Amino acid sequence: MTTDTYRTQGLRKQMVKDLLTQGIQQEAVLKAMSEVPRHLFISKALIEHAYKDIPLPIDCQQTISQPYTVAAQTQLLEVSKNQRILEIGTGSGYQAAVLKKMGAAVYTIERHLSLYQAAKKRFEELKLAIASKYGDGYKGWAEFAPFNAILITCAVEEVPQNLLSQLAVGGVMVLPLGEPDKDQIMTKIIKISDNEFTTQSHGNYRFVPMLKATDTTKK
Image 1 (cartoon, rainbow, N blue to C red):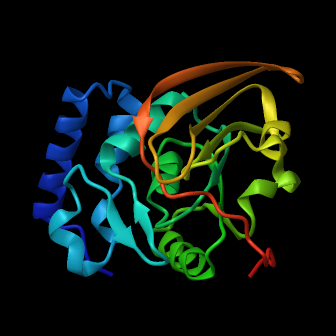
Image 2: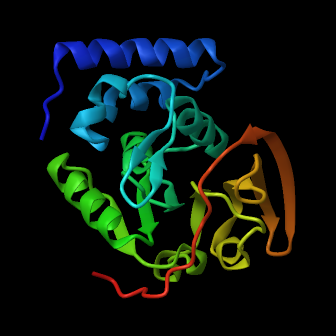
Image 3: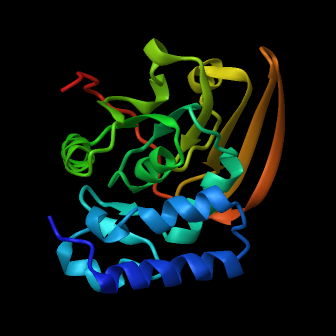
């Protein structure tokens, strides 16, 4: 595994300064992103781009979101220590690592087997106690529900009802809502009661679509 050098630490520090100027103000979010080495979650061939505010390709035609998007979604979640958080779309594992650094109990689901395996190995190498699962994100992870927060890191056309049912009362769900291949609206849903929700919109984003898995066997 590539090490975290003085150079990458300096680039990460500058990335966090840039996030602050872009409106990311939650100290816990900035601190976590200053501690998680983003360059360890991408191909070594892309390391020179690791701390630029751009999305980068990973395997399975997926991407690691640009730093601002990660920070913005995380800020909307209003993370507190020891919260139980479910992430749908592990991808590289970077977002899950940021949530873990903030003190949350993180559960993450990935439907691409190779991404799941790579992220699981990465978590182990970085000594991050993150529960990961290979399966269908639309089904959630009922075994550990209810969750204080649910984060979807891929585009959905409709809010998955299974996931809403696994969200605790008072909990927050953040997701990019809209059609694939078009801009989605970053949406924040707060569960007021079992049957009541409030919804907020927080700007346009572009994510890869959320896909259903045909094989949900845990491996």
